[in-house]
Length: 356
Image (cartoon, rainbow, N blue to C red; front, side, top):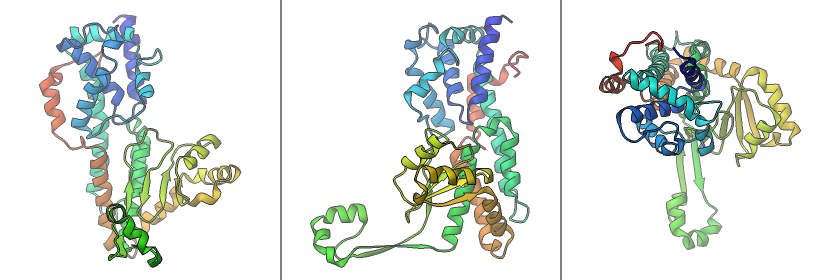
């Protein structure tokens, strides 16, 4: 093989390695190559502007089919795909020639990487589905993601699912209630803004109080793994989940990006002191309701799965973990992807160079 192709393949491998499980950028490359091979939408791979924006739509169509979501990163981050340190047009052209001459071999290579990452997720899902409260170990579950290079980049989402499952099941099992009501002296104001009170607050001049079941909710896809809101409760608390290192700038950014003064941070044991020190230094410690470590999570999981109330909590927590994995990664356990590969002709391709 030529050095030009080697350089292009090395660039592609680097992008795949850096990608999270969703593989947005590699899929975008695959769809550009597919359009170049099969349609008139991309005739010249060196003409970036002819496919820069259109390729995002092609990528999103595939992602919606197999992931149930699309990339929500900034336009600048998405366009980084075509910079010199990623996949510039001259390298993409080399991939295009190889791909067209071999019936879509590079496309197949990319989707094979996608499939392998999701097979690893299926193993994690199977661990949940095949475990009981007595044999499920949260450390073993998380270890699967630390040990698998293809999954480590998505550990933040798995960590978030682990925290959510415990918090939500415990909160609902305890049957926490949220009482919403207004001061009777503000009755005239309620009447004046009756539409607002009804539509937004679900209260009225005749319905002064409402009791809700307490719940935690996951926010969903975020633009970065390090900042922003991960979970919120309908009783005021918000949760920021960290498994990465936190520096002063990021600590300040995390807190200033959230308006709540009841922030819960979940972090590695080794990060607890650093986080507390940093938050105190920048004057935001008063806004933190609690800092919870992984050790505490493990203890709570052990109590829930094997303790006095395991008969109430065990199955619910494991079931919630499994359901959240399915929700976060809809392609896991789906046969649709195999149909997609067959329709595209990828299943028939073989190549030692592309390791298919």
